[in-house]
Image (tube, rainbow, N blue to C red; front, side, top):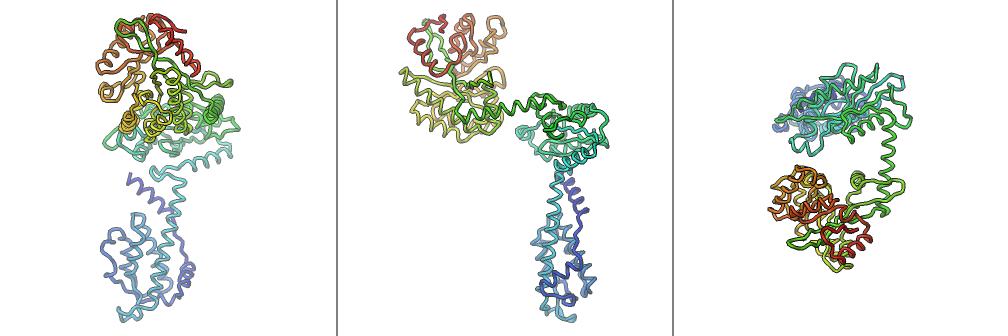
Amino acid sequence: MKKLQEEIYSSIDHEFTLNISPNDLLNIMQAYQLSTNDLAGPYHYNQQTAPVSFNASTGSLLQVLQQWPMQLNWSQLNQAIDELLHNWLQDYKAGAKLGDALILCQSIQLHAEPTTDRILSRYNHQFHLVLTHLLALATNEFDQYRYNYSKSFDLTTGLPNHQLMLKLIKKAEAEHINLGLLLLNLNINADKERKINTDQSTLALAAVDLIQQHLSKDTRLFHIGPNEFAIVIEDLHFPAQLNLIASELIHAFESSLPLVNNSLIVKPYFGGVTTFKHTSKAHSLYECAKLALHHAMINHYQIEMYDQHITSVFSSTHTLEEAIIEALQNNELEVYLQPIVSLPKHDSDHVTCVSAEMLLRWHNAEWVGISPMRLIDTIYKKGFGKIFIRWLINTACQRIAEIIATHQNSFALTVNLSSPDLLDADLPELIAQSIALWDIPAKSLVIEITESDLLLDEKKAMSVINRISQLGCSFALDDFGTGYSSMTRLRNMPISLVKIDQSFVKQIEQSPQDREIVLSIIQLAHSLGKTVVAEGVEELSCLKILTEMQCDKIQGYYYSKSMSPNDFNIWLSNFQNQSTLLTHKHE
C-alpha cells in the first residue's frame, strides 16, 4: 500500500507545476523592502546552524543549501530559488516538516562583504523572511493541488472517484454515447473486517487488483465509496455485456481474496443499468444503478439489472418507511400481549398464567399486515432506535404495573430487544429509571434476546446484559435450536428462560425428529436449571406431548392469540376465576 501511495503522490508531483515567475519573486522581495542588488551576495553556508537531525527528512533541500553560490545575479537568483523550492517539495512529499525546512534555511547567510564571514548584512533577516514566505507559499500551493486531486481521485487505490464518474457519465450522455454502468458492493461489513483483522485500505487494494485483471481496455474502474466500485463501459454494444462482466467477476471472487497473513472469500453484489434500458426521467443513470444494487442487496441477489419495476418498489418502500416513522412519532404504534401459560406440576391438572410476551402492532387502514419485524427494521434503519426502545421499555413497565394492580398478583412481561439495543451502554440506566418510575419488581421485566444478537460484538453486549441482570431483571433466550446455539454460552449467560422455536413445536406429533429435538432441548435446559417455554402451540395433542416431556410453559393460539392490554386483562380475569384445566381451551 505504501508503494502505491508513493506512486500516486509521484503522479501528483509530476503533474504539479509551481509557477513563481521573476515578477512574482520581485514583488515578494519588494514587500520585504529588498531590491535585486540587496540579494546579490555574498552568501555563506553555515553548517553549525543546520541540525544533523534534519538531514534524513530534508536531504534534497540540504543539498541545494550546501551548494548555494556565493554571488548571484538576478537570473541566477531566480534559478537558485526555483531549485530550492523544487527540492523542498520533494522532501515535503516524503514527509518532511515545514518547520524543519525554515530552520534549515537559516544556514544560508547573507554577509556584508565578500572578504568576511563574520559580519552579517543588514539584509540577512529580510532575506530569510523571503525564503520563509516562498517555502510557505510553495507548500500551500502543493497542499491545495493535492486536495483538489483528492476530490477527483481516491488516494488509497489511485482510482478516479465518484465525482469523476458522474462527470464522465454526464459527458457521454450529452454526446448520446451508449453507456453501461455496473456498481459493485463487496458485501463486507465492519464486523467481518474485524474478524479477519484487516482494514478497508488493504481490502480495497486487493479487490482492485482482482477486478482489474478481468476488465478490458474499454472499461473504466472507479472507487466510489467504502467497499464500493463502479465499472463504466463506453460505447456499449448490447446490454448483456454488463451481465457478462458481472458473471466473470463473481466467478473471480469465488477464489479467496489474498490479504496480509489472511485470505477472504467475498460474495459481492452487482447492480447495473444501460442507456438502452434507462428511460426514467426522475432518476439519473447512476441513481438507477444504485436502486438496482440496493434491490440486489436486500433480496440477496448477486446480480440485478435495472428496470422500471424497481423504481416502483422503492417508491412504495420509501412511502411505507415514512408512514412507519410518522406512526412512531404520533404514538400510533401499539403493544399487544400474548399469554405464556404455565403447565401443571406433579398431580395438578390446572394451568396458570403469570406472564406474557409483549408484541408490537400497527393498525393502519392503508398499510395492512405490516409485520413487527418490518416495523422494527425500519425504525432502526432510519435512526429512531433509541427513541423506540425508550418508549418500549417504559410501556412494558407501565403495563406490568397496571396488571399487578388490577389482579393483585405477581406478573412478568417479556420484551424483545435487538442487536443495536445490546450495544447501547445507556440501556441499563434507562431500564432502571423505568422500573423505579412505575415501582415494579425488576424480576417482572424479562428481556428476550436471540443468540444472533450477540454476534456483532459479544464482549460489549455481555457487558450490557450483565449490568441489566444486576438490576434484577431476567433474560429469556428466544428461538433456541435454530441458530448459533452454544452450550457454553447458555451455561454462562444469566438466562433463566429458554424458548423453543415454533418450527420444532408445530409438527411435534407428526415428526419423530422434531419430537426428539424438543425433548433434548427440554432435558438440556433443565439440567442447567433453566425454565422452558414452547412456542407455537395450537393443538391439544401437541400440548399433551409437551406436558409429558415436562415442558414448563407454553405460548400459542391453543390458549390465546395476542390481545390488546384491555382485552388481555379481561381474558386473564376469566382465566384465573375459572381455575382452568389443562385440556380446557380458553377462549
